[in-house]
Image (tube, rainbow, N blue to C red; front, side, top):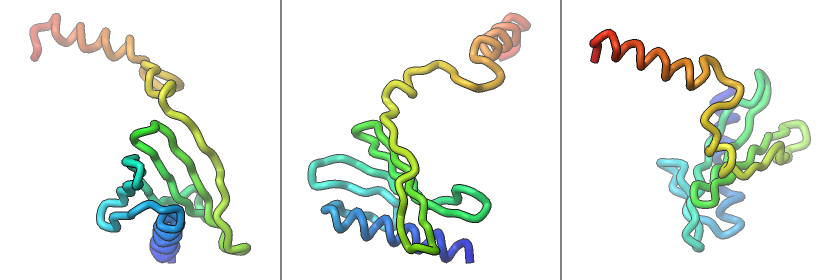
Length: 114
């Protein structure tokens, strides 16, 4: 049942993209617009009982997440974001820290290991 929902979400996303004038390659999930932009569409599970579509515009550096609401048969926008500044961070909310990894690598190299 879950795979059927994922497939249906992918079809819905494809239909929406075609409706707004984008071409969809079903094999890769890659979408190319007439304006030359590239959008990657990925269907996936959002919570234990809900599914959605992730759209990532690789040229503009933006993404959006949509959730399928089966009871009302609607697609709801959950989030949209420009990723350009996010991707300039060296680290955020992660462990171990980048400087800790750097120290480990330097220790490893100083011991003569390659």
